[in-house]
Amino acid sequence: MTQRGNSYFQKMKGKLGRKFQEEIFSERCQNIVRLLRSYRKKHSQETIHRLRVELKRVNAFFILFDPQRKGRPGKTFASFRRVFRKAGKIRSAYIHLQVLHDLKTPSGPFIENLRTSMLKDARRFAANAAKRAERIGKYPRLFAHAADGVKTEKIVRFFEKEMAAIGRKLKKDTGEESLHDLRARMKNLLYLHSFLPGRLVEKIRMDTSYLHSLQDEIGKWHDVLDTIKVVRRAGGKSKSLENRLSSEADARLKDILLHAADFHPKITGR
Image (tube, one colour):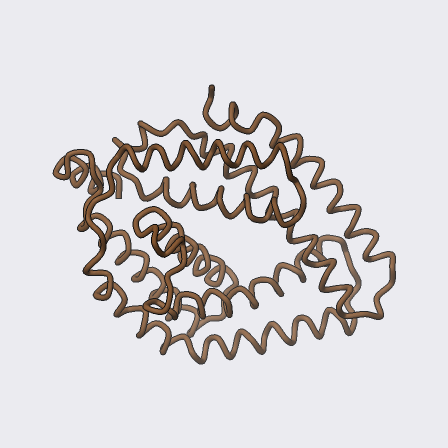
């Protein structure tokens, strides 16, 4: 994408034009279609994970290149949201099982029910994968009348404003909802950064390694918190499992706060 992006960047004289946007969007759609077809043949958790990443890339794309949608594809591209939601249900159940496994939780009715429900959702998702793939395969044509080019200055300002806003929020609010929201914003920056041509990337001071590491820590912490909620909803579990999960979450949060200190100087190198 970088070499092709640089070519478009030169032709548009400092703008990322319609053709560049259409190729990014088309590539995302092609990847989603391919992953859906792959999952129909083999119910792989890695495929579900990659599928959700591609759908998050689509949302990030709309934030920058179609701001009126505010990162939401909307009714025109409704299958994106449906696939993301249903794939998320499968992925969440898998993550909860992994968290419990990592804590060496003995198998029992609770875990077996969680696994059975996940497999049932996986079979249902696979059964509808071909239909979803067919619909999403047509989406690039619906994007043919996208907005004109986005100026370089606007893109650079977007990154600068987002990094500053994330840094301010980290100083004020590190609650569960806030950190979950900030992680989504961090990931959007990473996804958008990966779309950009090299010549434009050079204008954006952003330590992607630091950002990826921090959002990953937040994600793993949030996985533990979600697992606690699942355990509580199930009922009948010993208090000791909740306590172990809570201790794990507390330890992870401490690491996050240390890593997030001085966020803006770390991410910009200033």
